[in-house]
Image (cartoon, rainbow over all chains, first blue to last red; front, top):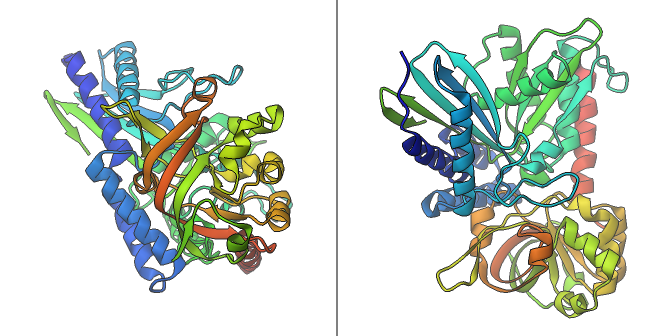
Length: 295
Length: 194
């Protein structure tokens, strides 16, 4: 059975997905920011920053303007049933991207690395970035994440063992790396950040895994009990660094730590850090039985 | 909250200290990577008038034209400043810039220039794009738009109550250094627990 797609309609829904992702921050992130505001001392610099951030979130939603002017890399994860053409879906996503850029939901963010010229419409090589996965449901699910350049620049990849950190090839070593990465980032990734971690893999799959963690909801738990414990321990200890919002000093340095693991080569042990800023913009569009839903 | 009016004098600037929360009113100019390189490579004289006694804002905005054809700022949060470190001290000196607004702070070369010439670094809040755009009352001019594109052009903006925090003052102090020194120590302690 092939799912029926009304192409112009789906394209319009994807434009709406982009608009919502750019202008409407997810509830779990808002709640984490409210909590962070409330633990700071009254009228402290840190609390004032969180208050302004929350005001901005509300204004952006009301005005339908980007929460942050860096609308970043557009990362799509698409799950689709047998029979759906990924070439067609790609075309629709690209059309929607161009339209969303014209409507100022997205900033023109795609620069030719050789000429320095901005394409003006957010279309380029692997831009937007679309990951396709076929599944057995009779449903199309399109997830979108916008990840800005500031936090991308403080993301990175480490190797274990790390002599400087005294980190060995074990979870303790992974822990030390994450502390180092978040400390080095200071406020540059627009702290408080959400830290996606990929343990293992090759250079590519390690980082992909780290970024995929960022699709997880903040209050969720890790299926792996050891990683779950480590995630909670890291949030607590990273907040002790006292870096605070924007690196101004404060009690909240991270809003969450989410870790994924995969197999690796015997010779290589990579730990990838995908640092996401507090403006963690992600939304999902589903098409099932002719009905669209935004989550 | 301290109210700052642009254009501003060195005397007023030297009163500011790290940690001061300010609200900025007046005309300032955006400039980021390509604009900084242009100012250093070409040394254009016309920017002396535009930049004197005001602030540079490290920002690549999202803009739109209204029905009357006037430019409007839609989203205007700061970009990471450290990329301009190779250029900023020279620009502060040659163009009499009194302040630099951005994100994440700058290095020792800029810190020294702030002290020598009487300027400050102000940290705007990353991701406050809508509120910061709303503080732009009017876009008074834009230059190098065709050459550099929207995010990289020199946008001259008339702002009202633009919020920022002084994180590097004209006396050699940096909030970034004090926060880092403290977190470095905490990190040592955390790692030694294991």
